[in-house]
Image 1 (cartoon, one colour):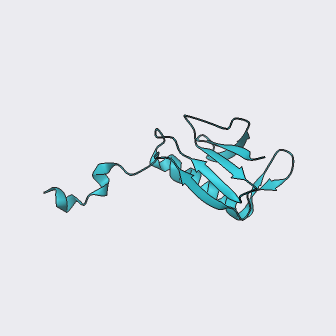
Image 2 (cartoon, rainbow, N blue to C red):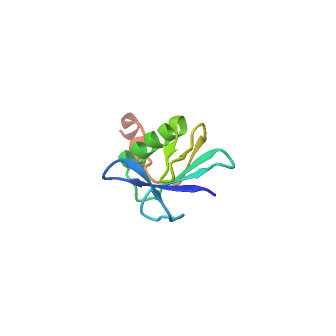
Length: 100
């Protein structure tokens, strides 16, 4: 059974949750069967929040996440990021020299 972690923007940490979908927050699914961390980023999330969540998720892939039941999950798993949130704005993808 996968473990669902929700990113809290106030503390910049993941916390365990019971919901498996979220439209307004970043959700990290720890799938022990496939050895994957699947992070879903909604479109309304800023780039700063996405990068903070991604750093935390990479930390979980290195040392794991301590669950309420006392077990540690996610250690050695591969991180996969899904969703369009937190991307660079289109105007920043072009060089300023190309504009003139």
